[in-house]
Image (cartoon, rainbow, N blue to C red; front, top):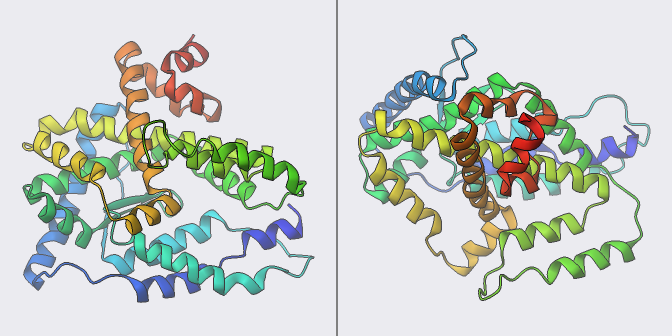
Length: 349
């Protein structure tokens, strides 16, 4: 990696971003000390209870005892997320170019901090494959369960089923963390390319921004614009990390629906209310923010990914599906996500 590439990787001051994000976090739902302590205890317990059913359903059991979940507030999530991003984008070695982009670290960090502050009120939980820690954001869990008017104990366990699935995925396939780091490095690398070539791709991609018959920008159209701004090598890394994220989120949703009926009494009610919340219209400002941060594309990941996993498991069973965790070459491509039979033919035949 060249000095210029290292400078690009270090362009965001994540420590500064964490400080900005913490200061900008929104106020949390009102809770008494008793309620706050009870929520924390129940989330700890729910994460532990979710382990057995998830391992049994996925047939992914490494036989180890996982560390306890970490229950955090919004500032705590911002700090953890900033640390994770610093790890994801970390570079090593001396910079012979003199870190020519380091001067942008704090302004870029301020922007990243504002993004983390916004996300801090939306994230329910997160598994960090670099620190190997499972985070549950207590105030957000409480805010959503109150908004949905669902049984708190059931909702907390339901959320934990999703996040514990991510922990189990990375325990089975630890190579995915390095794949993520390599992709992030590729995407942060400066590539010299004629601006005319980039402009041509962008113009073509913008034509796909609107879904036929729909005034809203399609998530795939926006992804097309992002890809158009990238060089070929970067587009390959972007597609691979997008396919990986779609697989992980879809598999977690598949597991939630598979395990839920046996351990979460009100799972049907929760799923219905949660899906309605995902698709609920928001204000134009919130829609724009969600678009810029890629949150709508992430929601699409759940849908496309779950369809892929459902289809493969229905056709070949869980044990054969688990070949997907065997190595990078077994991951589905973006095309295969929408054509499960193509993945089956390539990987399992």
